Length: 69
Image (cartoon, rainbow, N blue to C red; front, top):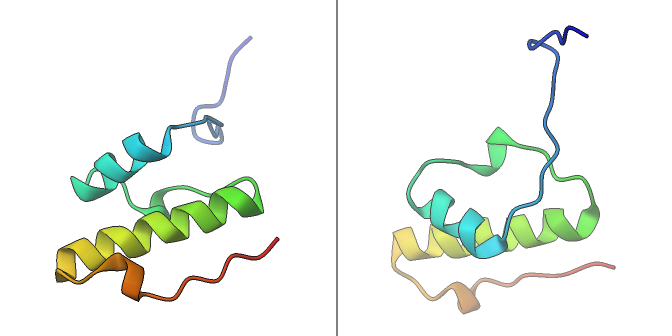
């Protein structure tokens, strides 16, 4: 069976701490992937905001985050 590698997407799970570390290192950003479910999307948004706050050297907890169910 041949796979057309141009049209293949890979679905995977990754630990949020590992994703944060990769994001902090600039290896990956949220624009590089798509979240499969709403909870994952919210967690990725939180990680992005925390990472951005670290870069701006402000407290991430000062950024209002609204979680929806």
